[in-house]
Image 1 (tube, rainbow over the protein chains, first blue to last red):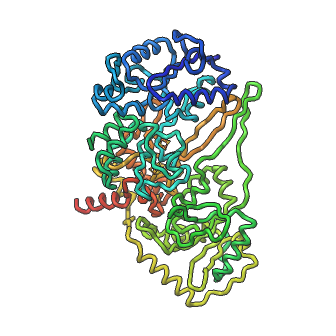
Image 2: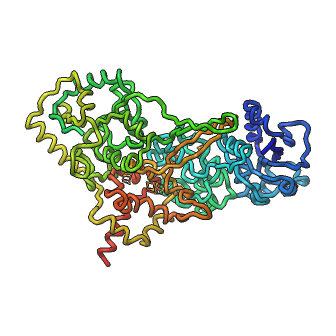
Image 3: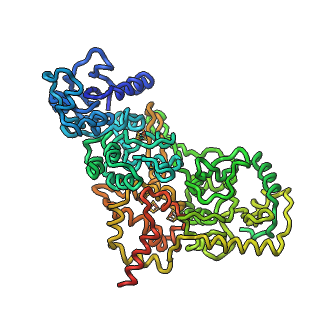
Length: 255
Length: 356
Ligand code: SF4
Ligand code: SF4
Ligand code: SF4
Ligand code: SF4
Ligand code: SF4
């Protein structure tokens, strides 16, 4: 693709993924020199959200009705739409609130709730069709480079679609879930981080969200057999990717 | 293959001194204890070696067959791509302290990787590796090599032919190490060491230790007609039950299996778009996408995937290679987060057939 026109839209999140992009933009000019960022409030001061775009990157979870409206409109103006980072891919951290009634959440955060029109936190694909997922918290380097190079070369990107254990074993780590009874979420979590936490002797807490098709109930039952209290099991499966079908199946056994 | 040389005894001190000297010349990869687990790692000092280890997390065969290997580079030159194969320069190394099950693991793996087709990357890594075996006297709770005859003490491959798969072989005894030499390269490693002739009591002690070790096994697998047995029960309820209730499709079992050879090829373009790197990485039939082809996946269920792993090891392998694909190392059982045990699955199927 010749100089693809990129738009970056930010919804509810910490903006860490855009910082990751900016980091890339500064350090890898040869690549981002090959693309036009025509909209992105953190990347360019000018720019219009009218498009049309070749690629739109969506950051953050949808937590307001007007965000959903804009997302749908942007979909219509873009050839490809790709959610980036856990919030946009699976609800991420913002979706922790989904376990509490919306009114309580609003009251806890805002002193005046009249102007607030918040809704349950949802990933982008609950509203629009998406073309790929750029997972990570923040968005992963390997997948990001894969997407950008595939776009420029006109090939089909190969995203990482297996679980953290695969990367953990390729690194030759001792499994801390088996060896030490650590509550590692690696078997149900999508890889891409290079098994960062287990490689540093820490349990994976699923910040990349579920591997599609993960067998969360089997891992939840394993945690129970290890002596983990039910509320903690629920927390393991709702900290990230709370709205996903995979993690719901793990959490609902213990709710 | 050279006929075995006369065995000799080397005292513990003499062995350490010899290894110390070898360490100056070779890279030595040996079992090292990291947070309570044995890992085959490059050592700096002889004192790092954990001689009495039970099983290593990653098998030695997969130290040779690397998790990630850069195969080639495609370099864009004036619009066309130049293919450059990558074979990194390598130094001779010694894999030290390899247990018999794992030596057989290497031999089984090699039926695929350097059998009818030669994998030059594996062959290169294998060629630079001298192997010093060590009889196992400390089987773990998941070990069942005794059921296959692949351990705990070394016997030639499938009970026939000259000893294969290692250059030197050691057995720890009271008086030091009984050393058997299988290759000329192995003999050269010992040059300059004073080996004494083993006494009759040394040889009796070896036999006793062998028997004592065999008595320690708690896990057993009845291998009698096992391949045909499993083939008759591909729709047994155990596949669905264990697959759905417990299998995480996490791939840990196959990643730690010494004989699993499956890999994936992935091309990664560099950001300058001028260079594309082709990598080979361990893959696994437990991964959901493994059997994905155009328009579908011929193993979409956990039941089908788990059955593929267990039946490949204990049944289909026989048809493919004339041997079992399992050497009884127990790693897949030990490192499965939910404790899925192929010996239990096989036993359940056998029990039911007997009952029928
Ligand atoms: S430590 Fe975690 S990620 Fe690594 S193999 Fe074990 S369960 Fe999987
Ligand atoms: S190991 Fe798990 S928690 Fe840690 S960075 Fe990777 S996905 Fe996130
Ligand atoms: S199937 Fe299991 S026990 Fe058999 S060789 Fe592989 S890892 Fe070892
Ligand atoms: S198909 Fe599965 S069990 Fe067989 S070698 Fe490949 S990964 Fe191992
Ligand atoms: S290690 Fe266990 S849970 Fe994971 S894929 Fe293998 S059998 Fe299934």
